[in-house]
Length: 379
Ligand SMILES: [Mg+2]
Image 1: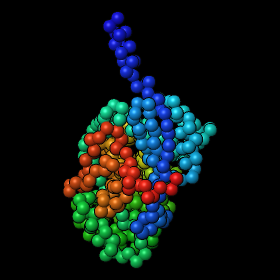
Image 2: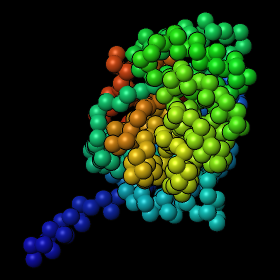
Image 3: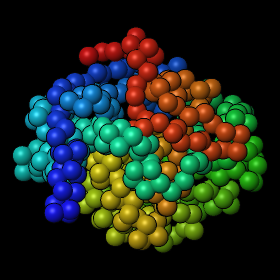
């Protein structure tokens, strides 16, 4: 009897009675202070979408995505299927939305699903009254960060590049990232040399080509860059050029990083199988949400690989704090990017030792700062 009673009590207070009552999305866009150029592209604006999932438990979850037209269309369509569903059934909802034959295996449909999945995990952690990182695994309370910059800007010489990268180190960063791949190899090697000279030997220097190279150019570049001791070489070639990655990895001692354009556990399974990549850069907003990110992190751990997510610092803070194989968080302090650190209510500050503390608030830490975002709303 006792066990039956216990079971009934558990059922009576079970989250299974919770239902999604309302879903909505807000889209935002703002101009960058100045356009930025990497190995392949120039960006003049930044954008984000906030997915809001309300429940009859009085708890609201927030997810983050992008307002690209294809993604918006899928997100609207997916969200309509959620009202009345139990928000804690994250695997079931993921499975119901990820439908290769109906919507597709990767791309915008998976991005749309990702933003929704993130909001569901926010609901779940808030229901549990726990910061998400503790609920997902709870491995650390401080995360080492890197600051990414070193973009190409017309009129920006070595001196300006050096000043920029040094300013990140002065803020506390123990790792900094610069772009390569947009100019001839010889010129990029001079840029890398200048930055290494400026930041000194003890700061990790990350190089990101944003897929600009063919594999043979990438090999020529990284062989010559080796003497400046890069910590990683990111997106040397296009995301599907697995053979290219393997050839580059065979030619250099510099660890390769990639993954910001990879999708789902299936894509990362194939990427890991190349045995060419040391550090994976999944973006939970794109590759399948928190549900999928945690699976990829576990798969990476089993292969001795590290995780250093791409993009949105707030979306990834709790995820890195939850896993043993976290390497670095891409992070922009207030002084470097006021919007990146201002769009969420519980944004951490950069510590002088180059780490950030994970905020001890229930949920995924994605509650938006409406005041900061309101002037940038586009839909
Ligand atoms: Mg990158």
